[in-house]
Length: 258
Image (spheres, rainbow, N blue to C red):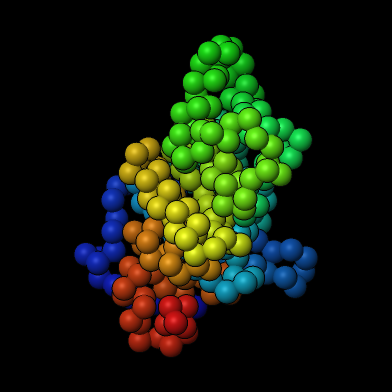
């Protein structure tokens, strides 16, 4: 299906050089369950790209292919100039460490305190880090999401919004250059959802991150997006700014913004 271009080149924010380039991406599960059907997508350095689409359109499969959690059937995925579909495990891990992934449920370890949850990735990737530097880095990461006081709490003691922010702090602790957000505001109230959206913007500004944000939350999309792409049946159907897509001549595109 031909992609509809809903905005001019000047309307779409394109901040830097391409940092993620996807060409002809295909992924199926079984013989008749085709999810991605030749997706082409470019994400530019420093850009917050929001991906919209109905359930089953391939949004989450896309970002799982990006980090190698799912192997694509066909196509190229270039990240930092590396085609990750051809990398061995060591080289793939070297790319992954430069990427942060915030899962829908924050994916905290329930048996660990907040401090231990944040220490885990640091100790894994910086085996010689001193106790002093470990504590300093953990506190700085928690401070960046406004939760330093939660350092010795268990996940069960935290609200859903707090767990999401702790998950974000743990993701940020390795200073990733690319952030992948999978439904970052799902299950949160309106005020907490806005706080998470504002954190996404603050992280982009402070850390100069590039991000892909998968969301059904149009308030989050409006606040965080430099550019929006809409997936339909495994390919890109449209791209543009929030405003241009909201006013699209295509009724199906406009339906996301009602």
